[in-house]
Length: 140
Image (cartoon, rainbow, N blue to C red):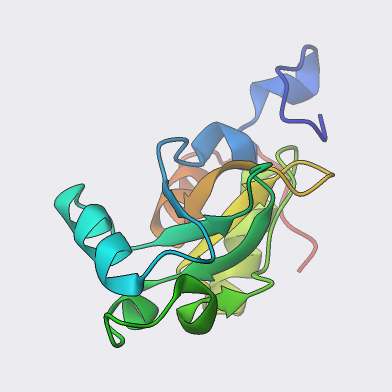
């Protein structure tokens, strides 16, 4: 489950973070310029970018506020380092509760070794959690 692989059994019937995360999220590297990345992301209709290294390990996050900064900055200068992440197996209600409580617009879903699985938006998490009344409530 920590690797984001499919599961079986009763617990596989309830949505988890990896099930809802957007797998087609935009990524960027530390040495790219913000102007280049912003153009690419906005052309694709996005508003967030996960910063990764060559091994796809999450290093940071750019949300709309960071994307609007000076185009000449490097991604390393503009990003939010060390974003809050969730593991793929965390129940969606728990993730939704945490994201709402901490006002997180989005959060990367990563494997136990930090590799990107996808980006989960708060709106997606809340919508899915509300549609699953028999899912376990979060502990937050």
